[in-house]
Figure 1 (cartoon, rainbow, N blue to C red):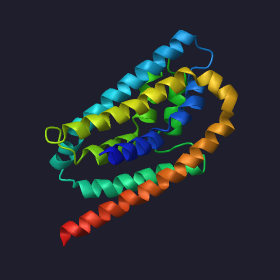
Figure 2: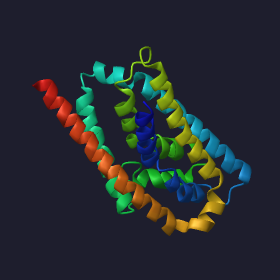
Figure 3: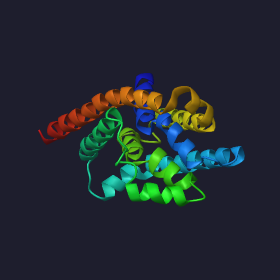
Figure 4: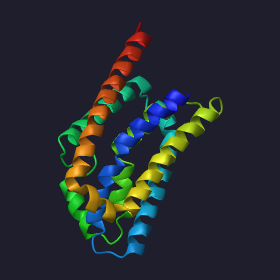
Length: 211
């Protein structure tokens, strides 16, 4: 179980990519008071946590209701994460997180916590897919300890995100945009390999079930 929790933590950390939130948060809250920045960061993490918990609790049931097998979602989730990994490696603005129109809208908003911070940057499609992939096979009543462990690992990633946003300005002075991009590219390579593994596991399980 410890190995599963560690692997989930790594995948979820890379997908949420807290380091990339540093330049983003700095840009969205530039010129704002320290109190405003702290309030936006805390609210964003809380809203993202609610979204992720809802997906963890009801995501598998929703897939079953829609007639979507977990294997099919594992393959799609792997492809989605692979796309995100490519964007990270090439340091491109993530189309899997927000469009140019949404980015323009976010710059005009007084409250940036729910959009675009909580969704789609923290609890974006990649993070939601990761939650469904890992929590989909976990039965809360039968595997309570594993379920709580996965929630704790996700909460730790959100806590790291909160701390990095609170320290965004001094961190930007230290690492700069180039440093954030270098870290993002390294994490993207790891995520790409894990995404391919998700697809392979989904294909193996689908053909195994079919056989």
